[in-house]
Each structure stands twice: as structure tokens, then as C-alpha cells.
Amino acid sequence: MRIKRSVLMVIIGVLLVTNLITLVWNWSSGKVGTPEVVASVGGESVTREDWLYALEQQHGKEELRAMVNQKVIDHLAKKYDISVSNKEVEQEYYLIQSVYNAYDEENLEDEDTLKKQIKSELLLEELITKDVQVPEKEMKKFYAQNEEQYSIPKMYKLKQLKVADQTEADQVLKELDGGSNFEALAMERSTDEQSAHLGGDIGYVPIDGDILSPEAKSEVEPLSQGEWTSPIQQDSDYVIYYVDGILKERDFSFKEVKSQIRRQIALEQVETPLKPESFWDEVDVEWFYGKQE
Image 1 (tube, rainbow, N blue to C red):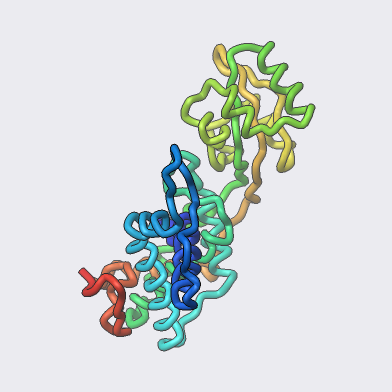
Image 2: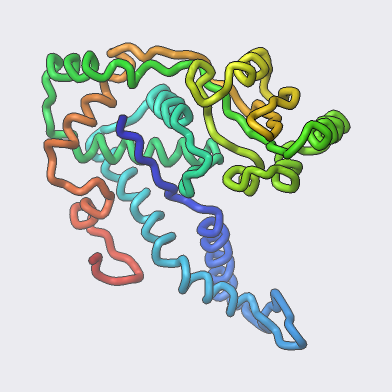
């Protein structure tokens, strides 16, 4: 299944834009007087002006590009009367969750931000494929050939904490029962290097797959979100699993995924790159950095 989602708005960008707007407002209001000091090192000051300039140099172009691209998409969606329903966004979000990989550097846990990005990308795909006609017969054939991709088993979003022996595992349980944070304990105690720095996060795991041992499955399946297992022996180690979320089993009908299938087939028939910059000339974009490359 084609699941390719990138982060449009990052936290540093939001902070950058907010501060740049504040600075411009102060300048335009004639309120810029003595530079505001935001840090001091050995008696040497770092001013807000220095800080904002550095942020702009490092992140300004891409953040402005993201803002322009969003406006391009919104403008053209209105022009061509193209919309994406909340149901489609929720469905795509569900499918993305089902393939969530905790080790993917681009994963994003901010649900609101991710849903906004999903909506923008779906609108962009609709814009690019708006003139492509895909026969119903072809879409049904695609669904029949890929039906298993739209059948999502029950999945648990898990965090794990691995330790060397039963004594240490029992100590971890004692701390958890006492109110300690699982993520903090995993970062501090877990011997699994790949997941420890992520607070033990290993993403969504199908309960009927082969990732969990039979004992782990029997321990995890009865749990609700926010609960954890007893220590489970795996080879010479002991693992405690924490349930961070649960996806219910779901089978998507052809009707539910028809729009997604249409876009997927149509995108293979167009030469226009899947990026908002393809429409900059159409909406006459002008920006601080001059001509678009």
C-alpha cells in the first residue's frame, strides 16, 4: 500500500514564524529600541535579533515554502471545488497508524498536525488527478487484487522495557506500581538499544502476527490502554510490555477506499510531480526568495 507521509509543519517552524511575526510587528510599530537579550555567555549577550536571524537563515526558506504551498493547495481546491471529507482523513490516519514504525525518523505522533498534513496531501492528489478518468471496473479489479491491504487486524501500540534478570524486572514493576513513568524507566533501564531512546516505543504490533511470543500475546491481549504486562522471559532477558494504544480490527469495503484507489491509479497516469510547486505558476506565486527553482 502506498503510504508516504512527510511532515509539513515542524515545531521549530511554528516557533520561527511566531517570533518573526512578532519582530516585524515591533519594527513596523516603531517599538524597536534596546535589543532584547535572550542569552548571556561570559558577559557577552545574544539578542533576540541575532537569534531570529539565525533561525531564518537555517529554517526560514523551507518554512516559508511550506506556508506558501498550503495556501496554493487551499486556493486551487476552492477554485476547482475540490474537497476531502473528515471521514477520508480519519480513514487514512487509521491506515497510517496500522503501519506505524517507531524507528522511522519521520514518524509524527502529533495527531492534529498529522491529520492536517494528510488532508493537504489528499487535496494535492485530487488536484493533480482531477482530469483523469478511471473506470469503475479497473478500480474494482485493483481492490480485488489488493484486498488484504485493506484488512487491518487488531493491533497494539506497544512500549517495551527489557532487563537482564527477574530481580531487576520485579524492581521495575514495583516502580511502575508506585507511579513511575514507563517511558522514563525504559529510557533509563532498558537494555534494548533500538527502543530505549524512544521510551521503549516499538510501534503497532498485530496480536495475531509472529512478532510476539505466545506468552507475550496472552499477557498483552487482555490489557487496556495504559496497562502493562508482568515480566516475560525471552531467551536470557525479561521484557515488560506497556499498551500505549489499541487499533480495533477493521475491514475496509470497496466503497470506503474507492477514492483512494482512484487517486492511486490516476497518479500513475500523470506526469505532474506530486508537489504543490507544480502549481506555483498557475496561481502566480511571488515570494521573498525570488524565482522558484
